[in-house]
Image (cartoon, rainbow, N blue to C red):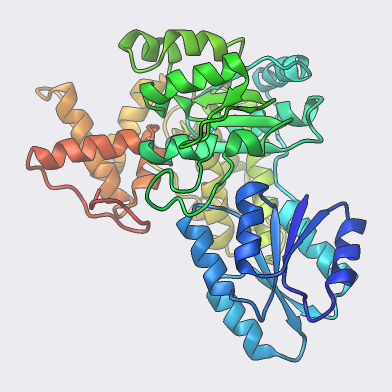
Amino acid sequence: MRLLIIGTLDGQIGAASQIAMARGAKVRQAEDVPAGLEVLRSQGADLVMIDVKRDIKGLIDSLEAERIVVPVVACGIASDASAAVRAIKAGAKEYIPLPPDAELIAAVIAAVTQESHNIVFKDPRMAQTLKLAEQVANSDASIMITGESGTGKELIARFVHNKSRRSDKRFVAVNCAAIPENLLESELFGHEKGAFTGAVARRIGKFEEANGGTLLLDEISEMDVRLQSKLLRVLQEKEIDRVGGNQPVKVDVRILATSNRTMEDEVRKGTFREDLYYRLNVVTLALPALRERPLDIAVLADHFVKRYTEANALPNRSLSAEVKQMLTRHVWRGNVRELENCMHRAVLLATGAEIGPDAIILSGGSVGTNPDPVVAQAANAAAAVMGGAKVNLVGKTVAEVERDLIIDTLSHCLGNRTHAANILGISIRTLRNKLKQYVDEGIDVPPAGGEPERAGL
């Protein structure tokens, strides 16, 4: 873990550094916020500890403006309660009193670095996928991980990294669907100062951050074709060009990529380069949907119940036999992500020691065991929209049914685009494109709710 300390921590920087290094952290120190930002741009960090007397709000604002994601912890003398309040209000995740306590710093480092990446499974289909993943993990081959949204593609990517000979190096993930097209190139390859408006200083990209380790290109099918050609060159030449730079930079990175689409279809449509696809697709790990591995449903449900009872400081609760039958019959369009949300909700709604059917809210209601996935998805969506009543779709075009499904799902989610996209099993970019099309056609679209959205979409 890489720790950056900004300021002197009231003269306690030496003690704090020794404690952190004893816990395996690599420590860098910067005198003030501008110097700290330079370290973050050029080398990155996993955690920032900042003297409460420094400009915490300025640091947080700069991190947001430059899209640098790193948790910030403020440190100050124990008696200064007002400074602690100001630090938290400014955006600090935690406040550590000084002089530093070894156990407290160790706990903060553990909380930041501990990630819940355990893969819980019982079904033979998932066991086969993990066996193949472990078999190819120790190579440097690029791997394409495919599967529906919510099946755990990033978990598998981390599993591959942790089983590889690069496990002691960094694992860096980039969501290609979440970053605007005009910024993704800079995010991947970095940029030089003045390369574009807002480029206030040189900044390394994700390829350089992951040098020696693994880079995950999440939802790579959302990447613009023009950027795909630059990515292909990087894979062939093993060097990147920073935006605005004129000197190539050598990189040694193992590439993993994920997609919730059928990549062969994207190649045929011309939205994904065939040569890049074959360059990435040395090995394919196809994750089965949750409905295709029914033996995993109960064990995952128990796992999430335990996690969220502990997280919410609630008494231990178990699932009733009736609930487990309900969960097994459900289609799980949102896969493991949907099951996790369902169990989190059930833990909060349950009133007794056992979680019964009254605490279970299934999206679209339950359906018969092992139905055809496409038919089940349409049936569940229609039932959710119409409160369980049958819906007559005869006489409607496919485009009309799709439009009604998207808009009604969005209404059901109170305008939250991310939740609606997860339920529909499409990317947020695809959803936004559809909504823009509907707006252009003069169709009313539910306003955005529960999340920041661009241009009302």
